[in-house]
Length: 445
Image (cartoon, rainbow, N blue to C red; front, side, top):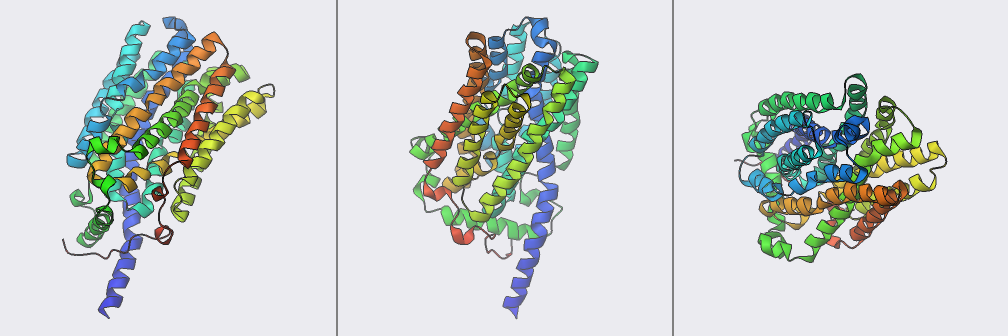
């Protein structure tokens, strides 16, 4: 009788807890990520919208301005992950939002490219800890069986921000000018700051909106996962030992080539669309929506398939290969405008499809304490690709052609896909646990 009662209680909690976490944890994190990405990529619309002419910026300088963000992005990756584990990710991102407000507004006031480069670098520093912090917060709230979907929804800030940024940027630039684009989006960061302070909790232990039974279930479930991996050497190693591990460098290299493709595509998409279709900035903003709508569908599809089957490597490899193929096709079909545009939409479909699945892997290779720092290292060094992609495309456009820049991105994505195939088998979820949450009943605190 007691066993049946425990089973019924466990089943009830399995139904109730996910619903609360999806509604109370994901939205504020997602909104903060969206505003960070809007601040990061609005320069992609500002450049063809008049910034390059007003400041005398060449294609190579535009690539440098887009990419230098990622040099600054290096500095707070590991500290951000560690602060999220040992301190408060909520406070870290709160202060980051303050910085985003100031830097974005100042960017709207620049008078030369030197000021622009400095502020883009500063914005990179201010946003540097964002991803490792939010991924650590997700790991504090979602067991492994749900983490692929939770990561994917949070990382969906990329397409959602694109869907918002594209028409909004085109509208603001058409109605006002590129300077107001930065000022208005800086003010939006201030609104998000208020929402963040009022809603977010770092861990289940701090939340007041769940019952003690639900809280205990979640804490015990996550603790059971950590206990299950406690005996494996690589997961309990020091950061120095982790950096000496070959798999760590595989993850860094994969992320580097992936980010090269992502940001090369993202930061040059408005320029490519304007040249391809000879449209106004308002029309470019509308055309840029569809690739990001496709990105939402792609992320949901591949993260769901990965969680259902437990196959992490496969569902990192397939989107990367699809992304590379669509890059090639966008150039090969350029003489037929709408076919080339369809290939660019295909790029959008695969743009972030591998990301949610990819970020489940560090939690399987490292302990919770080490995973925050590991995510920071992978994201910091991998995101150097965010510098190389836009800058390489800018240089290739200057000295060769736009086509050469796009082919470079396709090759980078192909290398990332090959890296995914070389990841160890332990990255995948065991078949018997892929379709269910861990069997952990609620216990007393």
